[in-house]
Image (cartoon, rainbow, N blue to C red; front, side, top):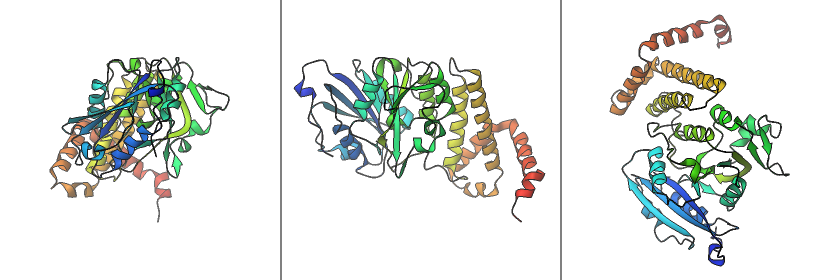
Length: 351
């Protein structure tokens, strides 16, 4: 892709000021460079100034190496910040704390993802003056995130949303439906989100959730305070294949998976404490929390889990799991055993 000509240079009216935050932790060179190029290739139909903030989260490959000698248009100002490794939430918060006070919009882009050329234009135009929160579909070749979700497949008949245009490609949530929908499902991948800066204020990602859920919680919190939430069915962000803690954590008995489950338990506790959450959404967070706790207890029953006790991090993670479940653990084990011995389950078991 080649960068679009700078429209900001050709216009004299007030530019839209956009801050783009990219947390960076990768072991492969070149991924960040492609992400930066996708920002440089944005088609912007109005004057704009883009503040591009990369937060190097103690990455094995330094962000400077990927950004070195990269030609950027004059309407982009690149800043690279550095911190000791603290996780994606802390990296994004570092970026949020560093944005210019006169920024109008905040967009997020993961370092192994890319944007289509009209992502920023589509998102900011869809926000208009009535919405604070925008997201779009994410391409996950050969499919997309929305294609796998009932909520989006049943549009426009889905309750609580209405189309914003005649093409039925952009929608808005009606009333409080945005908040409850964000609690119910993980609706938006981080690289698809654009926010009005004034709506974010002091709100930050939960840094204790280092292994999963920090973005989902942030979107649910924002959804309960935003004036309006709009979204597009266009897949204007493209998922990459770099380091992704959640995606890489699904070996069931791995320490990563245990840490992911512990994060998801904590995330649902915090989500249930959101100011203004409705009773049905609160009940859902409690149900999900119990489901994750049951899964954690089931893993702790597995003998093969303890083959990794020579690894200190694995020992610490297992100890954390035991501490979390505490006195509830025998009850969970009893419930798991009861389910395994249930006659219906026995009849369905292979001979």
